[in-house]
Amino acid sequence: MTNHYVDISLPKTARVAGFLYLMIIISGIFAEFFVRSSLIVAGDATATANNIMASEGLFRLGIAGDLFMILCDVALALLFYVLLKPVNKSLSLLAAFFRLTQAAVLGVNLLNLLFVLQLLSGADYLAVFGADQLHALVLLFLDAHGIGYSIGLVFFGIQCGVLGYLIYKSDYIPRILGILLIMASAGYLTDSFAKFLLSEYRNYETLFALVVFLPAFIAELSLCLWLIIKGAKIPEIKKGP
View 1 (tube, rainbow, N blue to C red):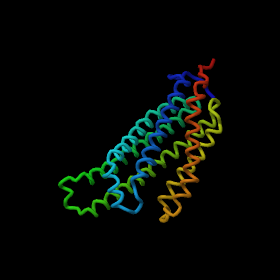
View 2: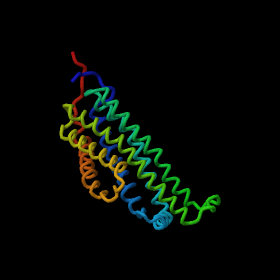
View 3: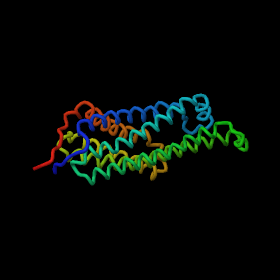
View 4: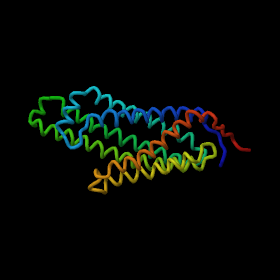
């Protein structure tokens, strides 16, 4: 590995990256599994709309959680670039680009959730729609948000693969974490493309959740905790003779 100066202390970068990653995991789980999963009733537009109207504050908090997650992701893209630049500058930059693209896709995708709030706002111009029509549109935009999320995960999955390779090739982060991230990458890409290619994906959704997201969660949480706990022991890289 070629040694050269780094602009930011690698141990400090690792610790900050670990805390940011933890914030991303917590806010993402909160928004997706504690907010939307508790409010959305699959296939029932009226029940879903009623749940959101009854818990509008919670729904808005979920959107804020997603936005916070995206902001952290933008910062984390830079920190991972700094952390892994000594391994391969070009691949580290590529990983950052894919993570930033994912953040951009997810940011635009939040518009679908804001459209849901607008449809349920009771604005006068919405009077041309009947209640059932409004509720159907609500479910349509929620489904669109799910599709947008899957598109974002394609970019994130590629980023995980590149990041995992860089970690595997580094001599200051355990290789097992790189292997786990590469496995997570394969899982994310498999799940996302299955949603696009399988017309009966919903029949296998639970299976994909167990096979794909559980290993991915373990991989990302393991990296996050290692960066927080052990990251301070990463040696500084000096300029060679």
